Figure 1 (cartoon, rainbow, N blue to C red):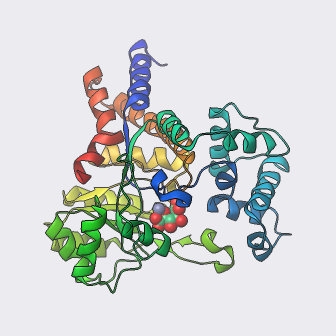
Figure 2: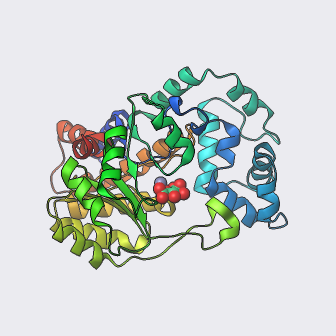
Figure 3: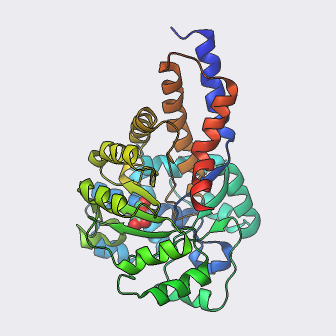
Length: 375
Ligand code: FIX
Ligand code: ZN
């Protein structure tokens, strides 16, 4: 039986989580100033690499090579037909497309993409951006900025000044040979909020990464547990997961107490160990439910575990959005899972929370803690 008190508490949690301004700690979005790198619209949404993997699995009569040889709109048509028309869309990535279509009042059961294509073609990019951020509840988001990407590098060299809602992060996956001076040049140019890398396992990381974080007081973000290209034929959709050895992370964080580490892990099996490590090291911030963890059931499970083990001292979610409108679905769905976890945790506590405490917790989880670590 739900008592009237619990019912009010649940409504209050939903409202507070729903209204709390979001700081999205990791995305692959680009500000409008980046031109073609700023992806939006139905064809981009449907050719998200999550959906490519799912559609080529559902209909293996099309080979990956044939898929990638076709145009973007042909690819989008294939994904739509395969995952939305020929069978019931049930995966989280397909739910995401439907949530976006619904948000704009577009058809979700059409056999073609005509209406959606016309709608997106009609949008003014700037006002569309404002509308998407408003619908998603996002006040600021962090891009992934890679100086080794020739297109991106050219824009920085030309003195680009991104929309201030789009914060920068210096991605160093492909800069393991860079010296400190080179990294400092990019820090000066991009003014990143943190330095970031994705790893399969933590090995011996280049000393300049640490030097640059120390010198500029920047956090070091580690995204741990991706095994790249387990099926190279799938291109960007071909990556997998491994359970990482977290003792290496613990050693790293212990040996560098003056560096703040933002860490997310990809394997469900690493979620508990990351909480244990974070209990020991205040310079370690668990963030987000990354990629294969970004499913409502796992977001709820992981958020509840983090609340039980860490209290409100972590960042429950980031979007990892690659296409602008994904912000709408990723945050709508995540807010639901986070609300479920938070309401459950509050209701399991021996003492009911005050409305102020609910508000404070929601603001901290959705944006305040992230802002505190990257400001
Ligand atoms: O390394 C990353 O930042 C990953 O998030 C990406 O490589 C991955 O492709 C992705 O989009 C996951 O959501
Ligand atoms: Zn990412």
